[in-house]
Image 1: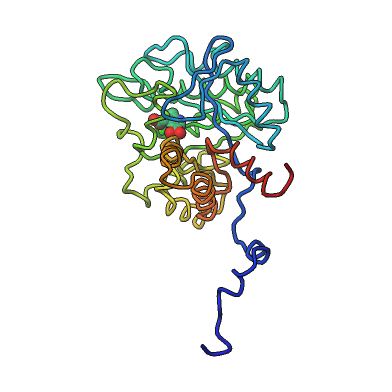
Image 2: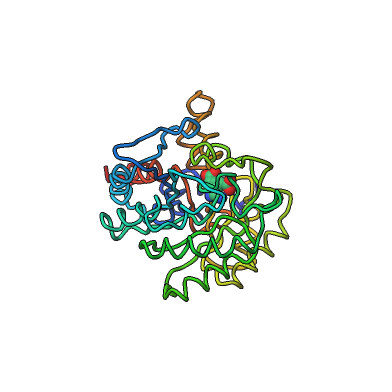
Length: 329
Ligand code: PBG
């Protein structure tokens, strides 16, 4: 061993030094916590495939968001399960729809918490697709008008940001225009830009009752094999006025996150989806891996790849761990 040699272990020996040279910090300020709202009162329905997550009626959801905000988590992402579904998903843009009610209640209780809403139709349509179905297929352009109505109705209810997750072409532009026309020029759009047709949404579809009744989503969500196309999707959404772009899922697509950050340098979110959560939870429960460490490692990896914002069902656990490790509790 020559004496001028770089010895990487010098900086690994002491834990304080390790922390000092750490390149990526997972911080509570970067997290978004997703929640599922249902009709009723006092409802807390555990989601079997997502242990630790429940469908909540608005009164219960309000309790939950107080706790979320108390942990310093800056934002929630709201999904809704309607009472009635129809072919056009009209509950998605109803003034008293479930998400609209939830947004109002959350903003009333914890005004400082950022409320982001998922803009899509699949939880609301009887066929379970993210758009208008005609002749057995999902029609792009007729869907845009509905998505724009959903986004405006969320903004009217008080949403701080809207997040279209449908993957129709041109939806960011249509939503931007509709928001501007309704004088919500200041409401940002976080676009699910590179959203893949992924098996990792399985638990979510149980949770949100949004499994397509026929076919799958490959006509509109991206092919998992593609990354160049993801860059084109992102460029398109930015062109149409997206303020934040998103890659989804996260773990199997770290290269997409990394490339998107390098190519565009814009605010980037990554959605660590239900299946990623379920995998770590399940293996942890079986004692096959250390759940806490696996969770922190996976989420740190998503940040290291280039995501500024991480949407995760683990947000509250992460917040607790970060507090504990800082010795605040
Ligand atoms: C709605 C939507 C989905 C997810 C977020 N928004 C499901 C889908 O596209 O099938 C998945 C989130 C998750 O799996 O955690 N389009």
